[in-house]
Length: 426
Image (cartoon, rainbow, N blue to C red):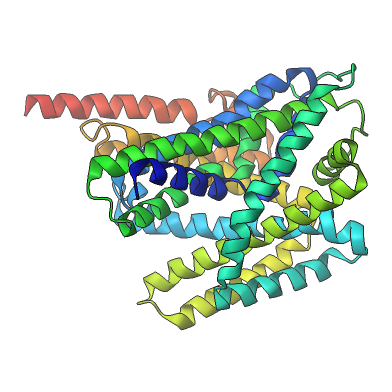
């Protein structure tokens, strides 16, 4: 296979990995709330959903290893614990959210069943497919993603041709920050760390002969994937903003996407979009369960029993969390994301820096500082006390749940420069 074909192939593979159908409910709602400030919200959202994932893929192009290599410079034990926690977060939050989105967009409106019943049937089927590793879903996924993209872009184009004249003002005080934090909910930065490792394995199977060739293929295919996400996310945010005067202010994320689909495509088109999203959500859920089960299986000498047990536990968690509504799952995810995302982002940035600067000491110092300064953000969301509010007021950007940013940057520069000077002296 030629390099150009590999670039296109892996570009679409990366796009499919990042493009979770369950994430389609996020951008329109963000634009809906942002109104006239939609471009600021879009900028923040795109930083965490396109820029940072792109950098993570460049990190993989440099490392050319697995996701375990991202945190190895801190320590191998840290890297293992980090990967396990990251997988547990994925299985407890975005995987069940696919069931909730499926219920609210397709099953509930069509059959009027309870969310718990939907969740039980949904994850029972997920378990069946995960244990049998059916190739049918892989084939289905290849066709679902392009069809959904075409439908979404049709909705966006039709909506942008003749939008309403009235646009309500923004409901956000800090639209840029709100967009950035909402981008956490796509899990795209985490997906970048996971998908990059998968692409490396796939390239090795295709027999890529050199380090530089793999680096070039990953970099160029990453740009294809991120450009696709950029177009879709920006279009949906703009659409939500332009039509924010057409729907009730308390509309839910899923209802907004359904309403926009109906406005542009009619009832039949909206039903078709709902079914497509439901099917794509299901393939995503199966992929998540299989990935986590495979990860733990590899830790226990490729034990099939471990794979089976982990799959069952994952689906059991999915049944419980998937029975709640989408809004509840998104809000529940915030504390976990405020803790795991900052660490993920600093690991991404550190891994693209030159090795001479990003030493083991720099990795350890920055990760520790990031973790410490992320704790007030998490506690501030869970249970904000007066004492905590006073402490947060002294930390730059902490009131925006970004208190870790400046301490991590200062630590990186200070420790990096000191280490460089020491090496130059030696």
